[in-house]
Image (cartoon, rainbow, N blue to C red; front, side):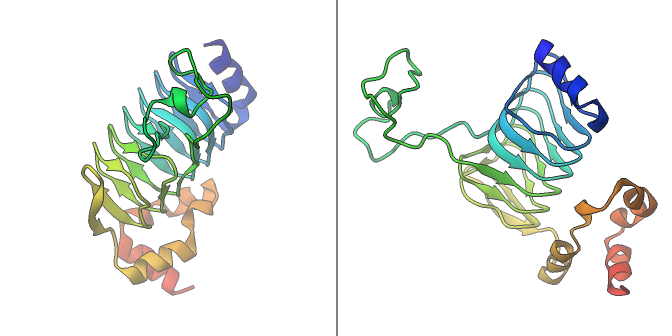
Length: 209
């Protein structure tokens, strides 16, 4: 907890909270980031207003603002080659995952950056593979395994994750991507919170601008 306590003190003006027995390394934070108990977060950038529920693992990821990430998620676990003779890392990695490496240099890229947009909801126990991009406003159903990019305001689920539906029609999605409400300040959000619970009024307001 010493590392967590130091991080919270150092980011006290940004309202960072790190839960019990969480491991956080090489991360940068926005405002109001909440990491619950037993999370393991490495080399990850946070936007504003993001929470990570307990027992989640995240590595090499950029997370936008207003994201909700459920418990038990695994994001950025790393990759193995499928077209080599063996998938065992001692043949292509010098990280010594099993205490030994047979090679003297890295021969395969084991990790790729993951990008998660703004206002994304990721359900419990989701797995997101390396190199994937999740668009703004997307929803990932609980238990899904995401192997490829997910478009903005798209709902996916299953193993592997497949398209289920879009949250809004294409015109409204384009409006939301243009408005980018997640860049507004807290005063604006408090003043207009009721619009976020009524899509019709939300879009009517912005059509008048």
